[in-house]
Amino acid sequence: MSFMTEVSSLTGRLLVATPALADPNFDRAVVLLLDHDEEGSLGVVLNRPTPVDVADILEGWGDLAGAPGVVFQGGPVSLDSALGVAVVPGDEASAAGSRPRGGGGAGDLVGFRRVHGAIGLVDLEAPPELLSPALGSLRIFAGYSGWGPGQLETELADGAWYVVESEPGDVSSPDPERLWRAVLRRQRSELAMVATYPDDASMN
Image 1 (tube, rainbow, N blue to C red):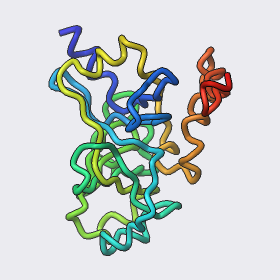
Image 2: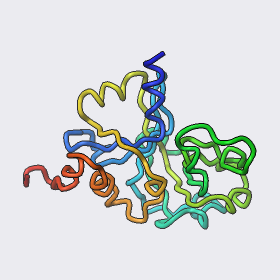
Image 3: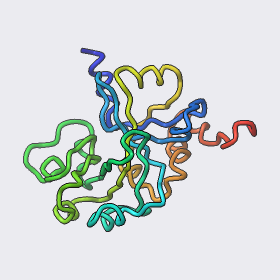
Image 4: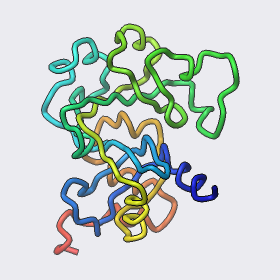
């Protein structure tokens, strides 16, 4: 049971690729974990914008997508599927535990499933106008990042990822190309120093 508790606790956190991670799919990647338990893990890469506008592939959702209003590549799995991740303002209080009963938090919002705190998944089949008054920001991802049972734990043990707390603003960062450095820089530990790591390791 302690294993379950330990595994479940990573949902909503960020995986930040270490300079040692060799997989080009995840070079300098910042992954938001949307699901993590004994059956495996699922997340989206927050800092891989594509040139494709959201409005070009999902009618009605383009106006809700935060700048840059493009589709992001969430990972190498199921690139032909779309995932919507959003932040609902005012629901941060539920990050630490259960939300008070009643009240119009994200848990009561049709077409939105809370994942962690104010962050959750949007049902892209729902009418956009139903959700638009409540959404603070929205990102659309093509594909996702997935790990089988125990696979992520092995990668963590191998030093491939740093695990850090997420902030609601990470999902909608207006400057996603700099997110890797920004997330590391805000850490109150030696991780802040990793943000200065050169893009070309041979220059170190």
